[in-house]
Image (cartoon, rainbow, N blue to C red; front, side, top):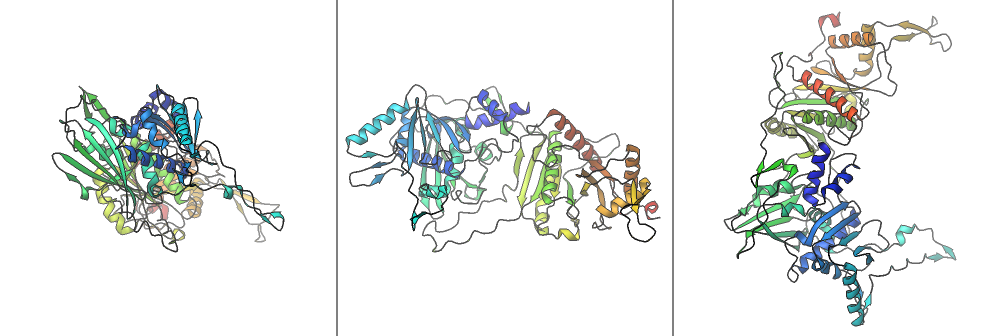
Length: 625
């Protein structure tokens, strides 16, 4: 069921045949990103394609297919494009380089177009492995169109530059010896047109043509671009049937999705919507090179009669269903852990602070533990938010001399309108989201009250930035409901070596003394929790077996666990899954045994944490004695 859901979600956006998507999804390790982001050279190729389509829309009728594309098959360094017809290939012909009699090069220098059967493969010279467009269409031979363009170019007395690869520059000689230069430096670098400033945004749009054709009343979509102070912006002009509303909230949901969508944030402050036209502006959450652009979607009704538009179709990522030719969103009731026979109830928005002590586990390990627990709780039907602290990237050094363009940074994404991103597709009503950032105490005080109203569980995975780990974790008073410590568990010792009569440790005549479970628990706590402040009310421990884990008898282990509970640090669970240090979860492509193990562990832990009496703020009197 999970594989079918994931495959359907991707096919909705790419329009690939579902059978093909199922085969590709089966090769994925995780389902965090169903449509891979293009690499740098590949993204530039796709941006050039989209800019060529934008320039030709006034002269060429590409039909109702967005960008003249029926479906795509995306990979990080390749995009297979099923064009709507021969006319959709003509914008690509305008990109191909030619040289005039005056030696002026027209088109994109270094671009190659190779005929392969009835399709055409487009790539940069000497960089075919870094990026490639494979273009084809049904009922037409694109290689014939390519040959016709070559013949027309030759008839004008111009030279075709796209058909053959140029030789690499010869290595330079110094005093009769060849310079030791890496071969990669000899390859000609791809050209840097203005569109490169927002190449990843353009690529994200081209890889998702299904967004528009599945919307209600779709008739046409045209794309255009413009150079602005911060880079290159993109404009999509939608045309819908006369009886269709110009505003559609589904657009913001689809463009804002982080699993199958491009993760763009709707800038509500610039929203302008009237009875005949609606403008929606979207800013990428990503803020790096290649994302310096803003997308505007302008929707208007058709002014003349058109044939009936295709009925709207549901999107899997929105958990929609089709009932009597109408798309109905599923509105799950707010989920929560059901009350048990013990009479307790979790209540809304329980905040669990997950910390490690010292350097036994890294912050990355805490994040992965939180990811596994959150995925398990989401699969059980809860809405989960993981607050993941990531240090802000240092600012890039300023170029000197400063470039004349872009003149200023791109507008900042309104992340306050969309503070968290979805991490995985889940079974309704469960949800799994993440809030990524560099968090201060003040930032968490603003974030958590809002999160409590939207989620059943909020996991703070080492969520305070620039904390001094060697001083031990700090409980977030007023924010945290449960304080949980993750520990790399070496296991309980059953014996201990003692010094010889001379006061020095003997290497040949070691004497070992048996330990009781209570003594072993005391030794364990001193070694693993000595940096944990005694005044922190610990809800419990999550133990992860270490590389040198010792396995005492079960009765011994249970008695030692009981002693740790007397100290106010009960053992909640032991995570023994082989996936615990990976980012593959129960919501990904994992074995049935690993999934069932983690689901059972996470359900048991949720049951314990939801109890109001879990954990103690101080050791018991028996433990102090």
